[in-house]
Length: 304
Image 1: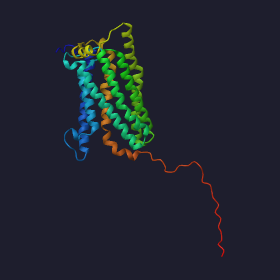
Image 2: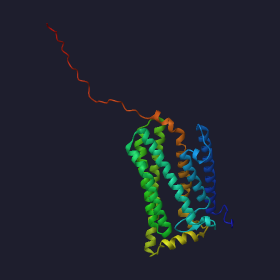
Image 3: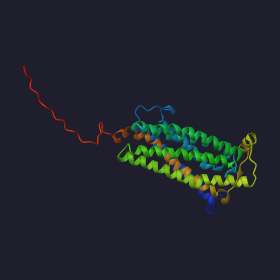
Image 4: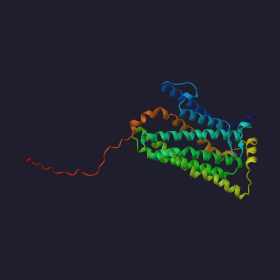
């Protein structure tokens, strides 16, 4: 395996080094969080059964993203940095599918827990939609990588956008049910979800749509199911050319850093969940906007 391309003059080498550094940091943060949760959990049990579910789901996401950072690839283009079967789309997309479903489960669990504390039916219903939407998005992604048709990516990322638009809506409504630090934290998460939606609507989804339109204009033929599966499992093109990677660098850099940090924050939700009820805004039992009306009471004399 040649590493001659790893020079300071190659932008792709600098980018890959960034991904490795961020992934190593993220794994360290995961281990630190796991250790802290373990110390703060009474009656800790060894093994996977004893791990806080949010931490376990985050571990799948963090490690999955670290694997994809070490061996980056662009699915439809079939390009990668290293000549190994682990760089194949089949392996990479399989890892990504598990990791992304775990990430969606984290969001669903946290939103549902907040909805339970706030007694919000809207947020509770949204929490039930998150995972089905992401599973459908994963199906669209597999369609895209099998056929090499970017239309699948358009639908995939549109579904991610919809899921986080709903999450942002749920968090925004929930923010008004809390006060103090809890409200600020939920509002910050809602702002992050809104920023993600804006990015997807202005950068990511349009990028794949333009690629799909270009392929249609060029009369490109797409793979069928069997030929596509064979191709994604057996063909990978090693390239260190910045021109081939430049459109992937922005979203991958944000994905393998910011998204992973969000997963780690969600994993830490278990540490503060028991504190949230004290920040719940309590509504008065009786609320009225009218002044009480005085009632005259007459006294009567009993006569025999």
